[in-house]
Amino acid sequence: MNESHSCFEEGKLKIVSRVQGGVAFRNGELCFPKNFYFGVATASYQIEGAWNVSGKSESIWDRYTHEHPERIFDHKNGDVAADSYHRFREDVKLMADLGVKYYRFSISWPRVLPTGLANEINEDGIRYYRELINELNRNKLMALVTMYHWDLPQSLQDLGGWTNPIMADYFVDYARVLIKSFEDMRVDWITFNEPLSFCQAGYGGMDAPGANASGFEDYLCGHNVLRAHGMAYRMYKREFPHLNGAMGITIDMGWQEPATTSPEDQEAAETARQFYFGWFANPIFSKTGDYPAVMRKRVDEASRQQRYPRSRLPTFTAEEVEYMQGSADFLGLNHYTTYLISPKKGKISPQPSFVEDAGIYSTQKEDWPKTNSTWLRVVPWGFRKALNWIKRTYENPIVLITENGVSTPPGLHDRRRTAYILSYLRALHAAIALDGCRVVGYTYWSLIDNFEWTRGFSERFGLYEVDYSSPNKTRTARESVKFFSHIAKTGCLPTLNWVAQFQN
Ligand code: GBH
Image 1 (cartoon, rainbow, N blue to C red):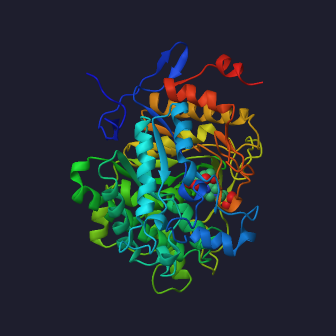
Image 2: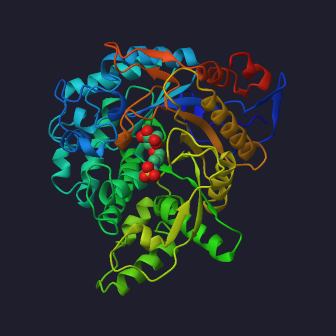
Image 3: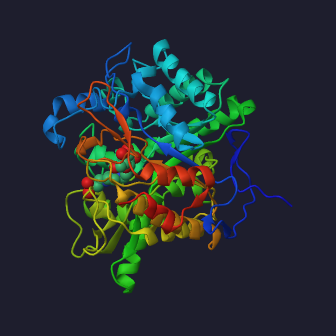
């Protein structure tokens, strides 16, 4: 019996229930299962530019970078970035050359709905994304579209942004506009990119909108994002059953390894996984449809000790639990690196904080190879462990790797990128072939260099370099392009001899 490993069928990300592992060798190369797809990713604010062009309104990242250039490492912003709004045909050509099967990009909400609400649709915004998807399809590339990769309309932030429960309804309205606008095209959907990042860093840290209310607003944000996701998924399945497309959510997970084998460190590492990943995964992918028990317990307890009459972590209604539980066709996973975890000693601080609630202390090992991003060290075995933990914890869900990648110094010689991808893909291959994890695709972050949020343009994740000083924002292939396109085209990991040919 022929079993398809992939959820991509007939150009759609179509979920199949049975998956087959097994190791395949072809021409001396280690190969991924047939129909395992490779893609590349970007996000609107990071590459589009055209921040105030053709009816687009202001996003929270426009506002934040304009008002607080000092909070961005190089004091720059995404006003122009790689100018992909004007140069998307060139970008599609790069992807066609690479030989990838799909493009994961995101839609700028304020470009499509300038008021943030569905009362007024900016036709030029819709036209831009329709042309992009058409261009992809003409080049036999599929579209995997993120609805929200952090660029909220400023007008909605003025209402409190994700801390306001009404946002769940507004998000559903926005999602409906998108699905309708591309109803006649091949599209699969990701509702949110990394809620942990934008809730925790946006409402409790240094990202836009720059709210400094950890332990409160980050939880409110998470709560409403989860509700928004569940409601949007039900709306999609109810109102558009004929589309037969897939919808999932992307959650990021670094691997949390216990600092030592002591029971205390092991327990702290598991608590960290539940706070940093389970926070968003548990309500959707576990049978409970609710926050992880350890998170509920710790935040409730800390809130009590701080004399709040109710927990800082909100509670879902039975109806919310019902629509969130199981509300995804696949789990999008962003994975980059690994941390060592130990418990944070001492009494609970009087000041509310997410990290204090989790009660963990996180470091990285000095001898793990460094990269051009301070937070990112090369630890490929953590990828395999993370995938196995997900398999165990959520009954082996369908997983799509929606981001994995590394930054390198400026220039085209990026053997560290090749080494990173090779080592992480070997770990991924083992997770699939040897451990039976149901992973159906791998998306490299990123196609091109882009605006790295508070790190500005200082960190370069692109397979293609962008020359920001040139008027055309010239894209040039780095050495790793040859390597990655071999993988994308054959589905196999090249031998080291093959890799050595073009590395000097
Ligand atoms: C992804 O997040 C994003 O989805 C993507 O937009 C981004 O371009 C890509 O990473 C590469 O950075 O500086 O110690 O405070 C990855 C998860 C979470 C990684 C926040 C960086 C900052 C750590 N990110 N983290 S620190």
